[in-house]
Length: 212
Image (tube, one colour):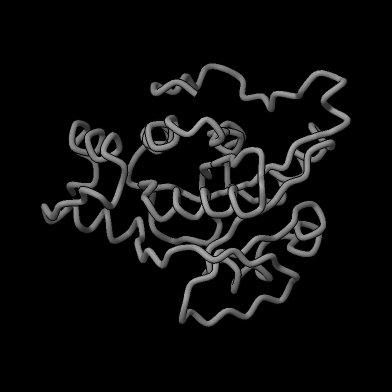
């Protein structure tokens, strides 16, 4: 994805030629608002990718999150651009804008139905943080979703984990960051250097995001 996201283009999942279709890929899926994307997101994706031997990790920003009440105070274009800036130096990270183009409330089940229909030869791994693991049973069509994708939990030391579905656990460094804390830091003029990739920090400063 180019740094300047062209929302006039139709988003497509690139399907491999027939010969490679039979083999398929191991694809990690990371969803979220990414408002903004930060280092903990990237570390979790890298740990899952390397430890589970995934071919790629796809970052899929949601349009309207179903589980969060906080308003999205930046545009979808800004969130997608920051995500692109954060991931472009990793050739196995991809940004997919499926949910932004679909519009409305973003439900993971809709995305996974689309992906498994469009490219059924792939195997999908849904990567979740500890808080998402504990609330997964409340997600829309959770039982069906657990059949469409292998569930992967990023283990956080000392965090109570009570999954109600089978889960592959991945240990990752305990980096306790949240997009909420980063937005709050920017709003009061606190440095976010090393909390987000430098290109993301520069974009936030250039655009004056999260100041209000």
